[in-house]
Image (cartoon, rainbow, N blue to C red; front, side):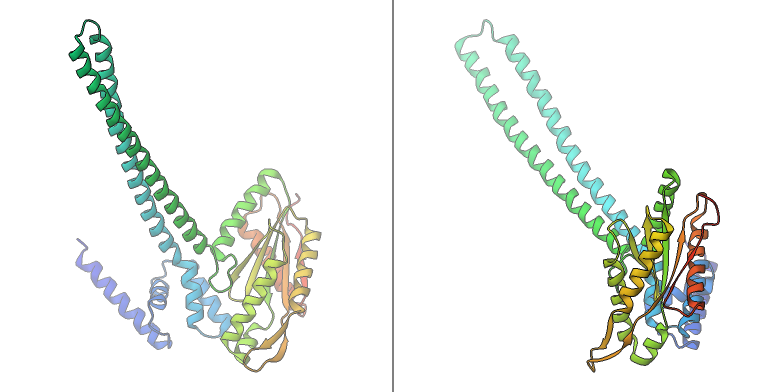
Length: 345
């Protein structure tokens, strides 16, 4: 039983959360409530930092920011529940299969004993006695055939169930790693993939580069043309990035209008060339507003590139790429800057 004091704490925190949301003009949706309840508690510093950064970038908290934060910090719980339920169902299917096997195994054992008894008794039997034993063996053989078919059907059914559950789990995991707006990898996928590629680079002493990119003056697009048009810009950029890289590379939406590209087995000079190719491909796109059918300018991006240095931790690697991106913005935007490895390879 939960102590009364704990209920009182929850009640007070809930009241504070609702008051904070009302004070800031935030819509009281389940997603927004979950975010601001955690924010108020201060128990998730990553969430707190992300909320503050996004509000600083956009000037205010919006439902779009809320959805992005919820996908980033709370969909993991959904994935965990689905994985747990899938594991339970797989276990149930396996238990059913093992039950069929054990039951059939007992039947096989009894059948074998009866055959041995038949072999021991066959000599010296009268015709009628022999006929009776043969009839019994035939009956048991038919029964064994039926058990074998039943066993095979049970195994086939369990196999289909497990295969369906496997596909379900793969779909949920893919959904959890995909950005809902653009269809490319999300921040969660980026974090997991970058950690994996860093480990591989360390083990193989191979090249690894990272591009951090940001849409220039994106807030102006939203303020002038609306968030729906801004979403179309983000989707166009994501599609261009995904099409402009090899199959081994990973393009991800890092957050808001910021993107990242992981480039395994790629030297720094090659990564800079790839970044410039992506920059030019994006700037070549024409922006046409659907409502007016008129061209409203073009997209440009600032990009920062960093090459991984052996023994460097992931956060330091990302920070160097971010610093190169910041340098590109300071240099007038619509350009590529790079960061040399801090440590020799």
